[in-house]
Image (cartoon, rainbow over all chains, first blue to last red; front, side):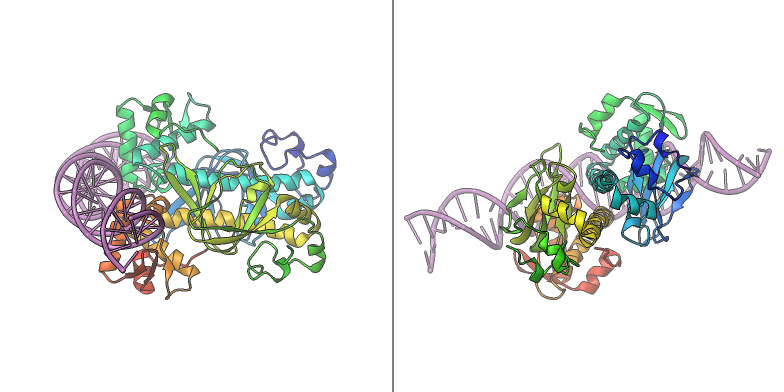
Length: 228
Length: 228
DNA sequence: CGTTCCTTTGAAAAGCATCAAGAACCGTGG
DNA sequence: CCACGGTTCTTGATGCTTTTCAAAGGAACG
């Protein structure tokens, strides 16, 4: 299972920088995991003995609220890391659910712990991953939890478009998910998107795909370059 | 300067668990830093060659928005760690400003890096601190960025009261800061608090101190125990 | 081809922001 | 000790935004 060395996303992932020497320390399998859109990778409080690197797809990290609804606290994109808390706690801190069909590498905690001890390169990467997670969280809060519903939807669209390289089709989540990401209701999410469409800012190709006029969208969002 | 061993907040802080052996590795001074209410500990993008443990007081971590206003992304309470990003980036990621007179320990990055390499106990603590930071960030998002203004203010009051052990006086931030924490306007913050006061849920002793009826406040907040 | 789920839309009500002004508080200097 | 000016807090009135409740249209799927 050790194809990590030639992995396509490795340059983005946890195992960047690793030398051949480092790889020799990996004695447990790094499996590939596939989750279909809508499937749950893990639940909060599940026993955590591995962590994940996202190779392709899109994952939402959520918390359930007291009223039973869910709040999206962050999205993870290819190259991102999920479940780092496995290194310090016995259980996961979020629910991780696929917004798109996704492929991940499943890395046993024991592997990361060993490398963390014996490879300064991986050790540094682990810290960097934590840092990135915090930056992502802060970015999410400032961008997706601030301003009017229109601004937030515009920012979310721009965020989603970064993955899919702009002009072509971007994945558009369901309205309920959009609501849970932005802290607004499903109806408001729907209304804003329908409105963007009427104004010609946004075109939906299928139910779950769209493209947009990036510049106009930036105006609505309040121009700010993306830290994530 | 090595009074860490007998430090009152050490049990909460980064240097928990350290043995005498570990302390012998610390060859650079751990300074005490005092910041008065309203003072800035550091700015985002400041060169970061040290990190901090909060001994007493309260610190707000903020980002400036494009419009010049600021958004509070998190509060740090005694025992918490600030500026962990110094370990992986050359600069700080937030503005850190004192909401109350505060005392911190200023720990050079070189010290933490050395201990991180040579003390498994500190190494574990560093990871735990990162984890805690992410948990705090997620808690902040779900609690302070979700629900009506009344709910948010109620949750913030409960959060602030945890420090000051309930019944006695708790620190009440300025209305503008409250707004920046909850994503609402100064006026709305003021109105909600004035309203709580009229309903007898909350009593202000001085301008910056209050106490409250915790149970009623919990009802308004939607009961949920605090993860932070 | 009908069922089911998701999205869109409408109308009314509630919530919140905005603008503007007055009141309370703070530190300072007389 | 009190008066003063600046700041922060409170309050009111108004209008926009968002939620809520309800229902109808569309797309997906067996």
